[in-house]
Image (cartoon, rainbow, N blue to C red; front, side, top):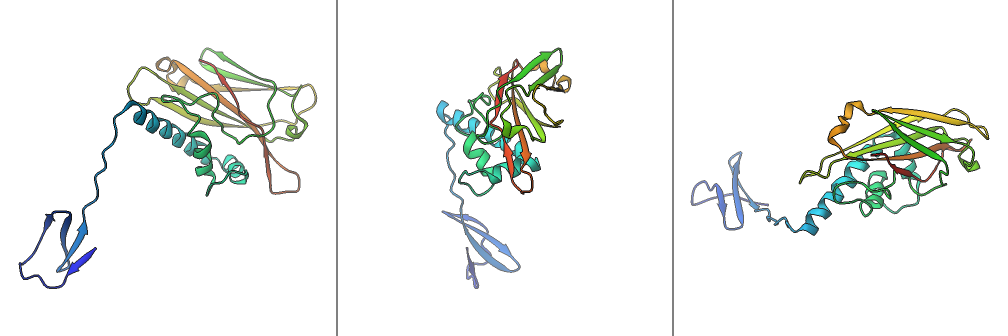
Length: 221
């Protein structure tokens, strides 16, 4: 940016070539015109933008949660913060119109061996069994479930991403814990596909450090 202290041509306003002239407080300021970039309309470019948009929406929803943002901040992935880590991991895993079963709400961790997901009318039931649960997950505090609904029938992205957090009861060797999510507010009939993503998290005793499971994903529509 530059200024004209004296102007023999009088006041200059507007644009001239690649320059823009604006007057403020008796002075004329000169700006460079912003370069207009053409947005590609090729199928590959559109799909790439859609995938990134989905990864950003997922990152926003996860990063709003203090526990999960803490987990991502702690994990060993090179990026500036939790938000960028989530995008970095998930951008390459999304589909053009939806998330996929490979997407993650937690970084890689201990596997969840027995999770059952049942859709009953307008409610999603999640059953977590401790029968084969890894010992390192027995002290988990929370179960997280992220619901993703979408429609493939429109040219534009049409989807829902919603995160739920449940407190866990203490585990023993043979118990099960049930969780219910009401889907009635989502007008499920307009969405033909759905995935739920499930993970456990906890805090290591005496340490300000998280532990977590890998993400379990299941289609329910």
